[in-house]
Length: 609
Figure 1 (tube, rainbow, N blue to C red):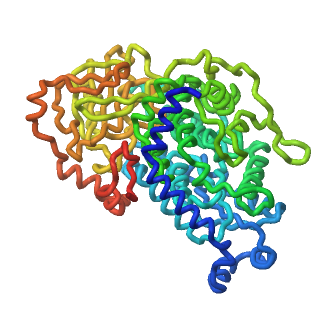
Figure 2: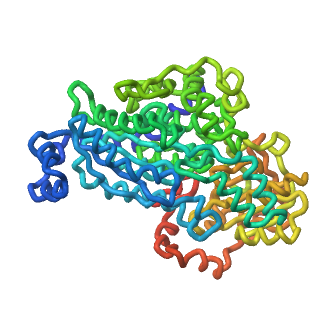
Figure 3: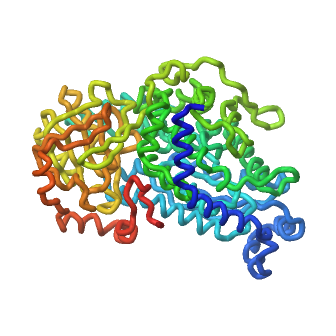
């Protein structure tokens, strides 16, 4: 095993010892109870099964058959989640075939960040994660299930479901994906049209035509943003049936994999003779979390997960931080180039070897923990075999991947990676701590030093761009975008104008206490700056014209201002009128308590602690 991997894992275990021990003790207490239907009063049981068919009532009450709960994030707003409409019937039929029963325990809200980008709804996006976690808890609180199937894919939905499930750590759980949409126009072509639109060279009609060709059917968006990073991480954590992340929703193999997930849930439920229960709180241990971190770094995944997986780990009694990510990034090679880190989409990634290839290479290089629990066994090795087809009996047939990549422009072995280090870096300095995604940034842009221009809204920055005020080397600072200020929205609208400026030869970078899209790419962006400006963080000391250095090579984020002057400066405050706009309208009033209580980005932006 790699020495750094072991050292980081050990320090996480030591740091988490008390919290993790308390968590496992609570799981043990809950596991020792009678089964739900035997534990409950008769009126409770009658309510629980009232709407079920008579045969299911008989199975549950008299035959004491295994009973599965389904928590679904189905809605028609998300292309990725639309296929879930038919899943409850499929799951129910398969469970009946296997002698079990099923109930949909509840649904969770699921918003599409693609719909809300740049709009007021995006200010609810980060907090929707914890809302989903709470909704998952409400669903599972019926407390009659032997295991649960969790149906979710996209940005905040998977972290929310996982956080909620881990607060029911005694319950065995299997995540059930639905797969990516088929490939549309290339991501590079889509990005080019966006840049042309930002320059006023094409109109809205042409932009809409391009976007509609990219996002055109059922399934996950095909770039490697937060949603598809979620799927990669769930494979690395052993929470899917192996290889199920990137199979198209309408493929017969997808149906077979969903049926297999039902069988897997039963196998780990503790209700099958000779098979021990595998509670999700035992599966997700410190080694499992480190495997997820490594998978993220090795594939240049979404920066959002430096927030979400801190919260996920905390839900399992495990404490991780950005230094852990940074130390792992120094030894984990970059093995994948999927847009925005390359030209390929996730369908091409899957065809070239996909998660199975990456996990195999990392395991063989000693950069993942192999001896971990998963829904498929007691090792991560099954996740290196790829589902290829449906057998004559309806079973999924898996095969070992070839030794070589199917396309070395998309995925490579650990012996010849795209980069010797991971795709994410930690920045630190007198402006605070931040993260930067470097996997798509040209090497000559890893260091940018220039005078800054300070904004408090995306709209103000866009207006300055359109007025030609940014036609120079510039560090664009957008502050008062943190969790306390306005819910930490993704600042996706900034990407096209910054890309235009960079394309003109200017040295540009973004510094913000907000988030970028999970698809943030070629423009260097120091994001999630903590502490945030509204909490008195150093970003609030910056003034227009201050020279700022963003350096991914040295891991520094500094304002080149005399130390005495810097210390003497007053801290800027958010204009009350702007704060009022972010506090009201379109549901934002309801999230005021979350904005007040939320922890920092590096602490996972948790609202429940």
